[in-house]
Length: 314
Image 1 (cartoon, rainbow, N blue to C red):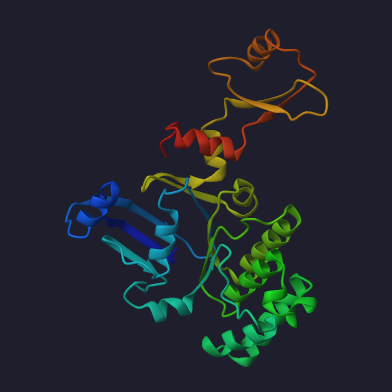
Image 2 (image 1 turned 180 degrees about the vertical axis):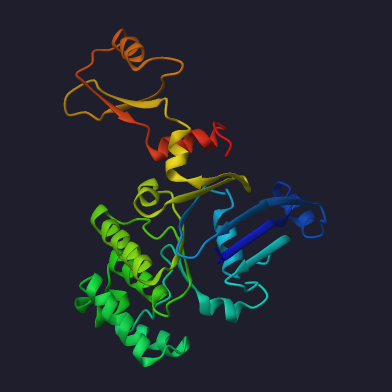
């Protein structure tokens, strides 16, 4: 099958000044040529098929946002090749922009003082969307969510959740082949997150839009993605399905223990290849009185933590 995104041995380096302390150091730094090289992304390769929903994961500073910015054409890689729908994004940013949508956290692409419908109309003109295509997309939106109350509301009067929802709608408006969602649910409550996830899944289903999602909320990955690419310190650690990811840690269980009523549960990650859950429970009980217990399969979040600690190679 044709690949809509291809990265071949992509790297991104930044040159930063080795700064010195104090006022004298700051003055000397003005004339310094003492630089160090930081590898934000290091020789990463992967391919993504049309319609895939991929979670791009990693801790702060891992290189996720740098990778997104290179694929969206904002940054040029230091080395390697990138193709998005057949376009080299950083060489032809205008052509690339026609094929992609982008949502960067809480940075809105909407016009602050205008009602949402006016932002949509302006985007329609910017992307030269045909009237019939625009009308069809608006009808699709209305079939997915209750859009009516938002259309005539100025963006500045919207809650964070309403604005994020509106930004996601705006990113899909021109029917792009790929949509990059960088921390789209950050700071939102559970109810709004649920609506946004439903919206993304429905748009992906209706338009076969490829979704690239970065997030620190692992529940977003569980709800939206079938595949995970994990990056840490600029290096790719894992690229496979979420289901396959969990199989690597099939011997792990999460033992949840309650020590006092109305207090929080305490989690213990148990590797049954080394120690049974019962042995761990007896060990805990010998030190502290237990009120209640639960045993759960390992969560995606715990799997990700194990990978950061060097517990897997794909």
